[in-house]
Amino acid sequence: MPVADPRKRLPSADRRQQILDTAATLFVQRGFEAVGMGDLAGALGTSRATVYSYFPSTESILDALLDERLHRLLTRLEPLLAHLPWQSPGAPGLIEPVFGFLLAERDTLALLHSGGGPSFRDRQTHFLSEVARRLPLDPAVPGHGHAGLLLIITTLLDALAYRVISTPALDAEALARTLGVFVRGGVLATLDAAQREGPADMTSSGPAPGTR
Image (cartoon, rainbow, N blue to C red; front, top):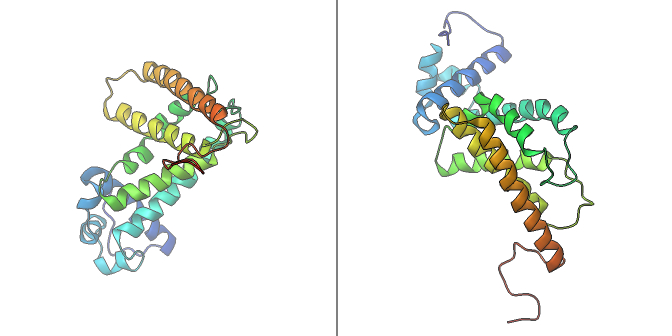
């Protein structure tokens, strides 16, 4: 990425975007926790004061980046989701296209895996939860715990897609087929258990009401 000329005044929106783009590159190259505001100012060829005038911390920069990437990803994903069989999260022909879509989002995947601290992991989980929440599951489908199932599926897709872009030798098509079979089997088994157990919350680990 070209180093910004500190003598050149940019419009505020352009400077803000320049900070975000440069920060994303540094986070992926060095790891989020290894990048400070001084590092960012140096890469931009500007002062720390300039960077601080737009963002109070690298955490706020990460939040802005993830919001931007989430909006972009969902905008691109919506046309694909509209043509998929969302009668059930385990429907055939569902996992493979979404997995292929994520593989094309290399920049977002790299950013989502550029850190490892507790604060970063919280933001990563929030991002994936938002993606899962937007998936158009039919509420008429029997069973419960769908929100949890979708988060599990989204997390699996994200982790495996990142592994593929990090390890080019892996066969992405074969992994997508295997993941599709795995997810369909697990989801259908979970929904079947939910139907048999009734309306109780399967995620509860405590005793059922009236039992000890």
